[in-house]
Length: 235
Image 1 (cartoon, helix red, strand yellow):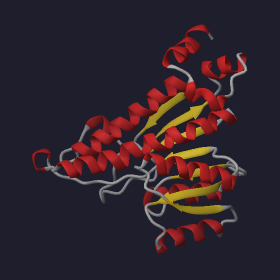
Image 2 (image 1 turned 60 degrees about the vertical axis):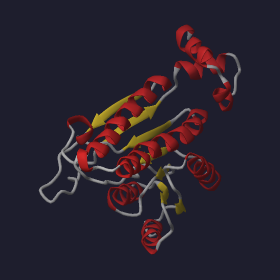
Image 3 (image 1 turned 180 degrees about the vertical axis):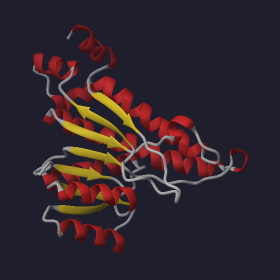
């Protein structure tokens, strides 16, 4: 199986696209850790469905838009599963309204859940993957993030932000990023091919520089911006 022995962490996977990704990965032998805002009956049903496929699976209650909570969950998943090989930033909402009728709360909610959550979990998972020197990050984007859409200024901005976040993260880590998008069906539901931005980590100049000076990857956060720039410049 394609993902046998791997562990994926998927945010907002109790239903919809997140659930479909979780089931798809599990059928390929991947262990699944997934989050939702609360451990409801729906979440438990998804967890049971994953376990029935013969993989390890565990649901976690998490507010993905909370920075500290995201880091706590990532640490817990590593403790429970031993590793995180794949992160899927799937958590997202819509609060549609025409711009002149959109409230500040509608704007803030969508940016917080869709974009800030992707930053939070990426920020928490990258050190884990850097220490392992491998990993993949998938963040759900949208054609709306490129083309825009009436009554979705907040949603479009959040998805455009995700695309830029992943491309910028890829440049920092010496990784590759690719964007894939699809149109929507007449029912308004996404077509089977998932829309996503894929970030695949590989050894970067920063890895090699840290290794060369016998610096632990766990100490990367203590480096100054100037030291990081020097790592790229002189590697």
